Amino acid sequence: MKRLTTYFLPLNLKQCSILISILLGLCLANTSVAASKIKVDSIIYGDYLVTMTGSEPYIENGAVAVQGKDILAVGTQQEIDSAYRSKNRISGKQRILMPGLVNGHTHSSMTLFRGMADDLKLMDWLTNYIFPMEGQFVTPEFIRVGTELACYEMIKGGTTTFVDMYFYPNTIADVVERCGLRAVIASPSIDFPSPGFKGWDDSFAAAEKFVDERRGKHERVTPAFAPHAPYTVAPEHLAQVVASAKAFDAPISMHVAEAPSEIEIIKERYNTSPVKHIAKLGMLDETLIAAHMVHPTVEEIQMMAGKTVGAIHNPTSNLKLAAGISPVVAMLEAGVLVGLGTDGAASNNDLDLWEEMRLAALLHKNRESDPTVIPAMTALTMATRGGAAAIGLGEQIGQLKPGMRADMIQLDIGRPSLSPLYNVISHLVYAVDSSDVVSTMVSGQLLMKDRKVLTLDHDQVKKAADQKGKEIAAALSRRQQNP
Ligand SMILES: [Zn+2]
Image 1 (tube, helix red, strand yellow):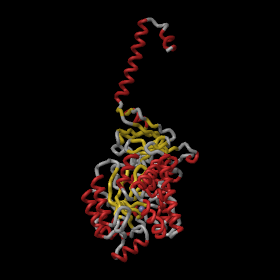
Image 2 (cartoon, rainbow, N blue to C red):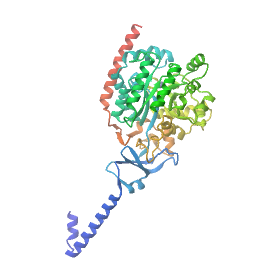
Image 3 (cartoon, rainbow, N blue to C red):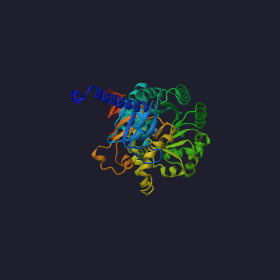
Image 4 (spheres, protein in one colour):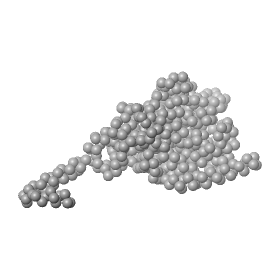
C-alpha cells in the first residue's frame, strides 16, 4: 500500500485514471484467461510421468488433470496448466507419477497369519497351522481386522487394486468401499467344510448370492467367483461356476496348476492336466484370473493365448513353498495375459508388489539363463497395464490416459538411494521400494498424502492386528503343549 501511494503521488488526476484503467484491463485479461481454462477437481504433477500406455516410457515434467473418478487429460505440465485449473494441485517436485500397482492374487486378511509358520512343507504348513487357525479364528471380525491391516499396507506401498479370495467377502467388500481401494473380491467355494460352510452346496450358494447382490453396486468393487482349485472342486461343480459366471457376467478367480502334487492328482483322477481339464469345462472362455500357473504344458500355454485368461505370477509364494517357477517368458511370448500377485501374507510374508516385480525380473533371467529376458519395462507392465488386463480391468486401470480411472501413485526420488537417476523405468523395478511411495489416489480420491494414509487409522489398525496376533499365538502354544 505504501509503495502504491508513493507511486501515485506525483501523478495528476488524468494520469492516475489512465494508469488505473491499464491496471484494471490487465486484471480483467488475467481473469478471462483463468475463466477460459477448464476447472478440474485436481491436477497431479510429476518430474517424471510414467503413463504405461506403450508409447514413450515417460514424460518429463508431466501432469494429469482429474475430473471426478476419471483422468481428463495427460500431458506436460505446461500443456495441462495452460488448459486446466484446480484448487487441488499436488506438487510433483522430486516425484515420479505413475499408475497404481495391481495385485492379481492375494488373501488379504491372511496378513494376521504373517510369520506365524515358515520354512515348512506345504502339507505340514496347511494342516498343522493354517487350517486349524482358520477354523478357530476366522470370523467376520477377524476378516475386518485382517483386511484393514492389508489395505493399510497396500495403500502405503502403492497398490491401488487387488484381487482377493477369502472368507466373508461381504466384510472384505465393506472394508474396501470404506478405505477407498479398488478390488475384485471373489467369494470362496470348496468341496470341503470351510469357515461358515458345510461344503460345496452352501459355499457356492453364498457365492452366487454375493455376486448377484454386489454386482454393479459400487464402481470400485467387482464381485467374482472363487472355486478354490481344480483338485479341491469336482468337475460338475466347476461347470456350475462357469454357468453362473456367464449368467452374471462375473470373473472367476482360482488357483490353477500351482504345485506338482496338483498335476499328479488331476492326472490320476481325470487322466489330463489342470488347464486342459478346466478348458473342457468351458472355463477358458470366461474371464478367468488363474493364480500361480506354475506348471502349464506348452500346449496349454497356447490354449490360454488370446483369451480373457490372466495368469497371475506369484514369485515369492512359489519360491517360499518350493512350488516351482512359472514359465512366464513362454506365456508372454505366446500372448497370454500375465499379471503379478503376492498371494496371502502367510506365504510371502508381505503385500509388497515392488518385491514381486523385481523378483520376476531376476528369477526368469536365471531360469532362462538369459539376462535379456523380462527387462524392467516388462516387469513394470505386469504390475500395471498387463496386470490390469489379466484381471479383466484393462479398459479401466493400469495406464494414465484420458478416460481411465484416476488410480495413480507418486514416488519420492529425492532420496540418496535413488541417486543418480539415469533411467526411470530401471529405478522403478531394480531400486525403488514400497517406502518410496508418497501418495496414492484411487478413482480421484487421495488415500495417502505425504506418506500419511488418510482413510485408515494407523494406531487403530496396528492395535487391532497385534491383539488378534496375541490370541492366535496363545492358541498355537496351547496346541503345541497338547497336540
Ligand atoms: Zn492363493
